[in-house]
Structures are given as structure tokens and as C-alpha cells.
Length: 293
Image 1 (cartoon, helix red, strand yellow):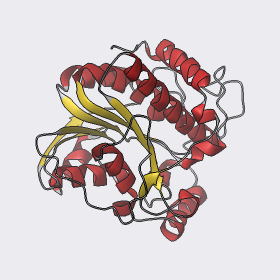
Image 2 (cartoon, rainbow, N blue to C red):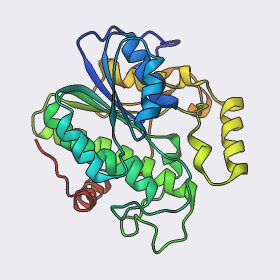
Image 3 (cartoon, rainbow, N blue to C red):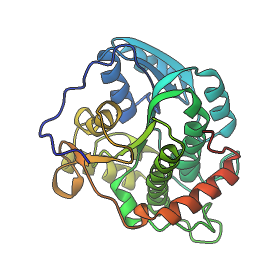
């Protein structure tokens, strides 16, 4: 893990490097893409809504391309991965939080599909085209997660939106650890690095279906958290700094809610290698995508 670097806010030049940022039409993804492009990178905004992506791209300085990608739809993931070409860094940023229960076209619960399975498939499909790393965005909500591999789609249990979100964020960290283990075992120089943004004021709570929850989420992050320009620094640190594989970057402040990028810990479940392997097996079965290296 890196030592604390107080007030780290200077992304090194990224000239000649190509990044894919999922969910880059708003929030943390948009800010991450903006900063990378300004630092000289070629950035692909991988977005579900291309028109919204074009609006975001128009406000950025540098080389920016918009491509359609719905990570909750495996057919879209496969199409994107087949056409994207060589990439240095994949930033798996897109996500949903506390949305009402719904099942995707592939038959998965929305949090699982968007936050984990779609990115699991995307990363594995793109690994042969990557030259540097995969960045996995998790959350401190993983600390409160309970992963039930026998009921990932919440068909047997009572559906709880925040619990489903937390579970998907735990899945992100288990994926991170098992991906790095596999990369190391296969002799690959690629690495997987994780981060979480603490409490950052974005519009991610806008689709909860509850006006009260949306209001609390929005204003709570504004009062206790960080503006998106600072919240994106953990992602940018994970995407651009020389870090060992399986590093996990978060804010250095109280309860990791706000602050500057530093190495942070994770729950015992998130560090369980057996659970990570079992989740990987289930994820391969559900997506039909396997480790390619």
C-alpha cells in the first residue's frame, strides 16, 4: 500500500496512453475522464447514453471519444470489448446505488449486473488488449455486506436496496483480489487496483425511487463529504500511480468519508481468497466469460 501523500492532486502526464472509463457521462466517471484527457491521455467515454456522453465530451479538453456501453447488458459488453482495440487502462466506474428491485435482460438483479457482472465480463474480455491495469471502483459500503452466493439475484431473500448495493461492492473487491491472483499466477505484467471515493457529492442516489432517500443521499454527501473534483482523486490515483496489484485506495480522513488518496483496508470477507474464488466461478457461469490469459 502507498504511504499517505497529503494533498495529492496532481495527475502526472498521460501522453500516449489510452483509457476507457465506464459511466463517464456524469459524476465521478466524468470528472475522472476530464482530468485524464487534460493530462494528455486519449479517453474513451463508455456510456449507456451516447447523447449525454457527447455533452460531457464537449466540455472536456483533449482527445475524447464517446462509445456506447451498457454494462448491465452482456450483449453490449461483448460488442464494446470486440471493437475497442488496444487500451492501457480500464476504469470500471459505472454503478447504481439503492435502486428498486429489477431484473436485467440477462436475468440478473440490477446492482449485481451493473456493479459487478458487467464489469467482470468487460475486464476479462478486454484483458488481451490491455497493457497496464484494471481499476475497480468499490465502496466503504462493502464493510456492511453479506454475500450469499446461493441467492445473488435476491429471489429467496427480502430485497433490500442498500444491502444489494453493499453486496455488489464486496463483490468488486473479491473480483479485484482474485483477478490479481490470476494475473500473477499466469505471469502477466498487468495489475488490478481498487479504489473507493468515500462520501462524494454526485447524482448516484437520483434513481432510488424514493424522493426522501434521494434527498438524504444528495444532501448528506454534500454536508459530510467531498465535491466530485476531490472525490475522483482516489480513482485517478489508482489509475495513474505506480502501485502494486490488489492495492485499495481511499480517502485518508475520518471513517474514510473524505480526504486525500491513501492505501486503505478492507473487510475480512473482502480478503477471503476462498470466497473470491467461489464468486469468480459463479460469475463465469452467469456471464459465460472466462479468464483469458
